[in-house]
Length: 428
Image 1 (cartoon, helix red, strand yellow):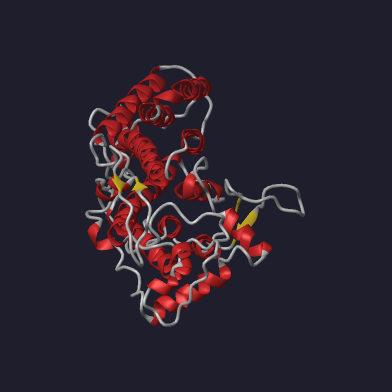
Image 2 (cartoon, one colour):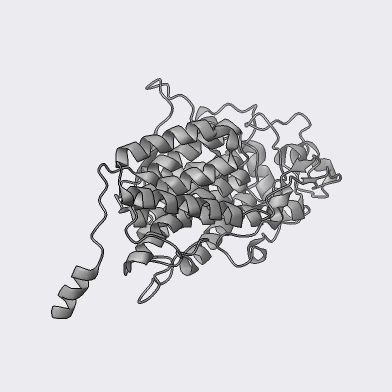
């Protein structure tokens, strides 16, 4: 008992700011706005969310480590060396977030600095705030520096292809196939096995499904609404951003350290999923349903027939190779991280996506409640078939890819430094 009392007396007191802020929520919402304003691609957006949340996690976790907190965990990118034991964790988180985002998007600096100053003003003054802010700035700077030269730039373009089964447009952004992962050891094991053979029955069955369900000439308001709800084109938070929004929508209050860890795990999984997704698309260069259906007389399959004027319900043919579905892979990763972290899939949440259509009953964007993370992932993936943009095999393989990437990250990253960590897909 005397030893316990002595340890408690020696331990730094809890750091309580003058006014609490929620750095993780606030700066993820800020990042969503930045991605929209900058019209970032899905891979660019995923990398942004990962770097932002790793910066906040390492800033918060570094101070916990310096305090000797038994809940401290392994770092993501920046080790805790130099962290101030008496620094304010909220100040550290907002400063790290600001440092990351201003370096990624210098054109947004004025808005981001205004947000930083407002957060710091709410936290108050004093040495703890100052020490936390200084530490956060160091972590944010170092996280950004660590990801320079990671393969995400400069932009590379895959030239247009030709022939049956081949995507016939040039496709920019393929450098992401070689980006250095944030959390997984190697992206190669997650690359898809490829679409079924053009001349086979499995391909013909998927062809028949999308030819009917994704046909723009067949009016179906419900299917069109589901497609639009998940369409998420350039100028939105992109598919990875919807999973950030879903995490924000979960009604499970968390302390700052746990919240920062959740979003760091989510960010890493989303960013790392982009690597095998792009690599799979680049490898197989599979044609989209529009070309496949219009040119079915060239595929060598006796069970497919061409429809020269066929158009996708989405209104476009798609801007990247068909296999594999990126909407599906990001959704598989997001759903798996959230279910794993909370040790439960069936947690209901309500979501209005960035591309949600107007609900005729309310005159407002369509607000939907999902019973589980997996239900939202399945709906997002299925929307690509309904939109006439993907075959079902690309959806199923994409969902599996993202879930597998998430499983590795949950099992191996941001673990407790000592004692029991977690087992399986439930990192508690």
